[in-house]
Image 1: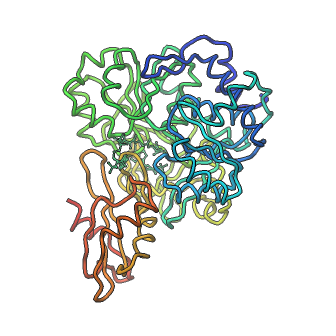
Image 2: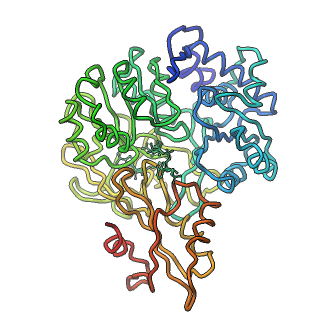
Length: 498
Ligand code: MCA
Ligand code: AMP
């Protein structure tokens, strides 16, 4: 193949007048129209000076043109780098600088601050949104075919930034092969076809909404109900015309909280998939009682795409993440990487075509997380039963997952520690009925100092996306520590986690 990603996902749809994106306003974008739009955007990128291998950072609201920009990058061999729309200018600045992006594409509504971010990093700036922008306008005037640039499956297709226990975000480099192999495996395993209509309420700047949901539907040739964000009314309205849904657990708990969501509404649905955070067994059971459907839970990571899945046909077990995917090797290992006997808890490690190419410009960090034999250390604690089913029992890494978004306490602690009057801080995840867990900050004041919480909240608001900001604060005299001096977060969670 000339360009495996483009030739697998997009080229086969050229000229097909079948529906691809069903928008909530009833507008339909066909596969053919989408492919032509991608070509126009590829020309617009070239006009901006983008060439093969360049990073294109994109922070725009979910809309058809944002997805077409992903296709355009694939067609010209540029590296697509989507960013959470909740990120502050300070956060975006880090990603643009670190990735050495050539272009930042931002929302026109935020063009003043984002243009400054791009300028400071030596990147060009353009705008795009559902209703227009400089890149969209430029695309409108371009030809709707584009000569696909030759690439190999080992070439990079995307960077996704993922925070870390050190507090510094890392750019996970994903190759064409990483994306294609996982999408092919999932399409086959979950039996997606051109008959499918997927309810798509996830953001498209993360693995779940982009490389699982969208890539699978592109591979299958089906359609997506493409909602700008999760909207329960829209989900309920569209469900009778859909066949499938993918969501984080919050999607399922919110549906269950709605009395309109019942067996009749889901009668024509064939599949509900959950991932990105643990789905409580209670939710799984309540969902089956209400609808007769058993949610299929799967498990993955930004660095690896999907690793395991409950079976499509067969036993979908509540509380487990199912079996390793057919082309993924999984072992539960001790700290040295030695495989443990089945039934013992250890760190989950995976190897296969899904595993990423490393962290951008961080070879030492890549080496730390990758075994010499090619297994990637996920940092998740798991156990594999004699029958192969994997259960995630905890996290070896200090991570909070809130509504499917990851929050690394270290990133918050570095900011809190730097505030006037704060001697030190510890951030923990506390249970939250809607989002699973949310961050709570525990602060220790400097001797004799008063902590000004309003000033601290203002500082975190400038530095951090809203979803990362602590939902609550506690002030204590000292943090609990073990004999090695390490903060005992388990003790903090026991004290404050209710
Ligand atoms: C929004 N807010 C949040 C979150 N989302 N706070 C904490 N955690 C969140 N996830 C805050 C906003 O800042 C705002 O705060 C208030 O909640 C309402 O915002 P709104 O946008 O209306 O919220 P929402 O639309 O109800 O969003 C909640 C959501 C959304 C539907 C759960 O966050 C979501 O779509 N999550 C999915 C994330 C995802 O795709 N994860 C996959 C990562 P205020 O009112 O104070 O201003 S990929 C991954 O994890 C791996 C690879 C995998 O396995 O899939
Ligand atoms: P991310 O950094 O967004 O790639 O998040 C990946 C992390 O989400 C994994 O390492 C797990 O800790 C968690 N995760 C994803 N899917 C599941 C699941 N089904 N059950 C439990 N944890 C999950």
